[in-house]
Image (tube, rainbow, N blue to C red):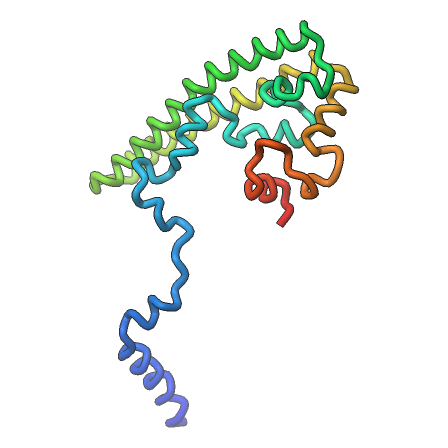
Length: 197
């Protein structure tokens, strides 16, 4: 009985007597290490650049990976999938409008995330204020995602079934998505989004 009561106390005493460096040597660094130097902690410079150029930021994967092509990649692959001049012109118009709207929505998202950043830096943030700031950021993100997803809805009526199939094959979707990462995609992100790991 005495032995059982003494052991936990002894173990705690030993742990408390160890220097803090003994624990630090075994701790893994946070996956966020280095991000503390970002101007907006929730957005990398690559994220900001992508948002400012009107890029997809992975927001249209629900469409893209379910066989509904997007205008940017259709234009990249126009020769491989046999787009006619009239199709290219229509898709270019969709793409231009998408980029304009995406840039504006991206700037709103960047500003909303910067507002959250500033509020936490100031240190006097209350929950009610935080809820409003988060709602603003999520509304901007939702607008941005809608811009990208809705343009995927605009392209299939312009294409033939054979062109959509050729697009899927050219993007690597007709086969195992884990076997080949399409050109221009980040390998790690592609594998994660397609459940390859």
